[in-house]
Amino acid sequence: MAALTLSDEDFLTQSLFHTGLRADGRSSAEFRKLDIRLGPGLGQAECSIGKTRTRAVVTGELTKPPPNRPREGRLSVNVEAGPMAAPATLPSGNPTGLVGSSQTPEGVSLCNQLERMLKGSNAVDVEALCVQSGALVWELRLDVHVLCDCGNVGDSAAIASIVALRHYRQAEVSVENGDIIYSPDLDPVPLSVHHMPIPVTFAAIPSDLGEDPVLLADPSSLEEQLQGDGGQLVVVMNQYGELCSVLKSGGASLLLDRDLMPAVRLTAARVKAVIALIDAK
Image 1 (cartoon, rainbow, N blue to C red):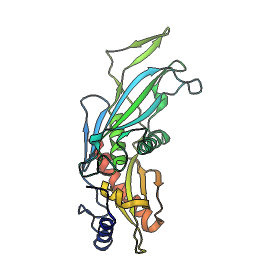
Image 2: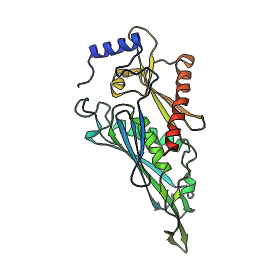
Image 3: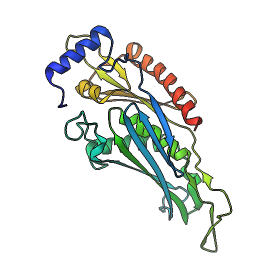
Image 4: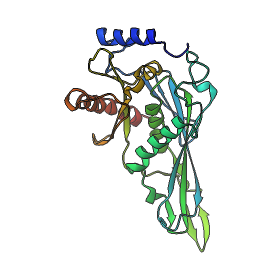
């Protein structure tokens, strides 16, 4: 279908504010089905939230560290989304703009979000990627592929990334007399992951009637169009119940007791369920 018309927006917004139900029948605090699958190789994972589907692939190579960080490896993030990523119900591609690559504004935004989550919170121990100080470190590349964007692609990409990093293994190597020595008889080494930051995204739906905005957990692509300038709230929490970050975009006014604290409590329950599913893999 085409982008939402004003009459469509009015109907959906009034239905939401009057009945409390969303277009897909969920309540405001209800999430779509979550599924996590490991890929055929180490460091590969796929995450589905409803029909939204992303795949994360971690690869690594040995390189020389920069002089100012001689004991630290590196982690880079790249996002790719092909023409098939947008659902058939959306107009010729994807109104969120993710079709393309990390060079689109939306792709850059998703890359930045993943980098803040993984690197800003020190989720991955980059010092553990050092083989020999000043000479050799591991450089990891995290490629995130958006396979189908039916809304809330950020949460899906983040979960797939965490799982891929947890299941990546790097070869056991050492340096002797300037030569790189591989040890194929030794088991590959898992990454040192300090913690698992999991984002939970809410769409802030504004009202034209002066009512308080409504926060919708796990927004669909339809609701992402409906949010307009209301923006989103992204709460990031790890498996220890620690609040990693709270990100707010858009112009909707959110209050601590009315909006933020309920969102944090819902995030805690959601993260607990996500972590349980990850640990089962």
